[in-house]
Image 1 (tube, rainbow, N blue to C red):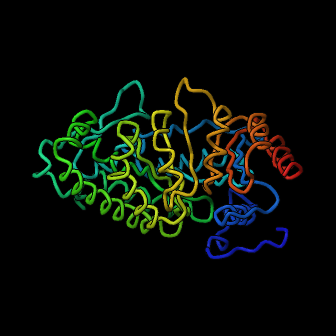
Image 2 (cartoon, helix red, strand yellow):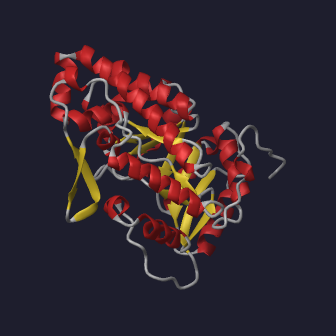
Image 3 (cartoon, one colour):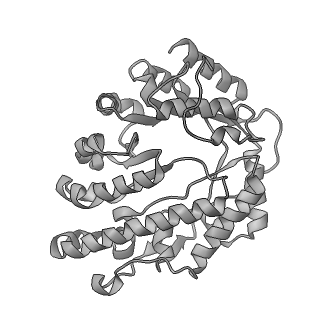
Length: 356
């Protein structure tokens, strides 16, 4: 595209039945991760396909844990066949069991609200840090074993058709929060900081284990890069963030390579300077949270992040991201949106080409 050639990854050999322009998308993504641009910013736009479709398979945390795997994996594939993936949007199945799944792999119990099968949490299980450390994943843990089977079965079914997204990595201090409880953990940071030092070392080893073994189970079908996060950061000071969260996030980023940091809530903005100065957290996805406006309300923040050399990932309807495009650096922006038809999606992509 415009003479641009890929630089250092091997994803261009993978064809996907559900996205016939996948190699072009890989080129745009590769340019983005190198701070470069081809003819427009990265734009991930999806829409329903034009033809009539059958019923939607109910894919949620509960069904991923409890449904027959063969039936579930095929049902999810059917869902993806009903969508158009335009620009850099890739058909990728998200196989997570829930935000606290890694705590559950370490011995926690996932609980569901029967009124919301796509919401769950882990019951805190650490009562004494000395007795609990180091955290480990028992290789015979049933939920961990199901995750590996789930990824392996998905990889077998989806190969050549679509990809698998890395699972939800609530490691770092989020793993400690799930294991101990948020209020108790806040007190522990003051009462026994040395124990938290050791606990954070354990979370990093657990991250490495989960990252490597899930990718191995995916057999080449797990997509490049991952999203890292530390939602607990909204409850701690910048000094605590620098002592515990940030060093582990940067080590996780070394393991992954291409990282998007999920920056959740306005209370986490106290860490802005540290996020901008961080190593390895290249693309920042700030989520304002309910009642705190849209992404378009944070242009000043995004410009500050981009001035510091970081990229951003933003969401919004087409007209909103068009307005944002006029104020943001196209080399350092990923847009996510949805249209009502494939034609609208393709027209939007051409608009970005004409206006970049």
